[in-house]
Length: 139
Image (cartoon, rainbow, N blue to C red; front, side):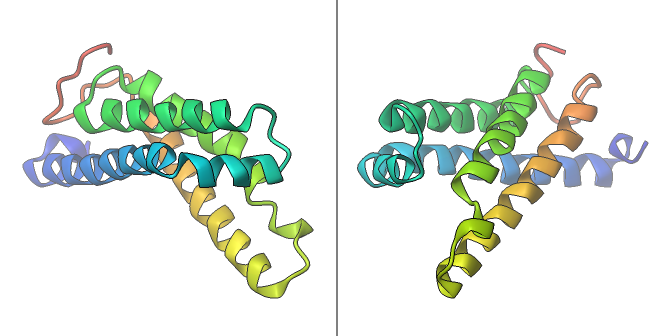
């Protein structure tokens, strides 16, 4: 397996760190922009929007850290996959938007989230094996 080579292991480490840390940063944005994100969630019809933003922010932070560190990788990757599975079609429903600029923005965010969902599923698929340069706790 490519992860067993030094180059493959280092590439996986860098990719895992970039993916996990940036997800954590996205989660922090849920707290620094709580009012704005809660308003956006309310406009999309999300029940208890403030609580939903806090909960989804925690999912991103904890899932991202789990991936970056290799701690309970299945739980972390599954939390990220579930986040994107639930959030993407509800918050970025570009097919319902009439304004062409907003339509394009929502479609871009939808496609970005779908890509991140796919990456999280890849990590779910390999979460039962030891990850190079990881703590490998909770395998």
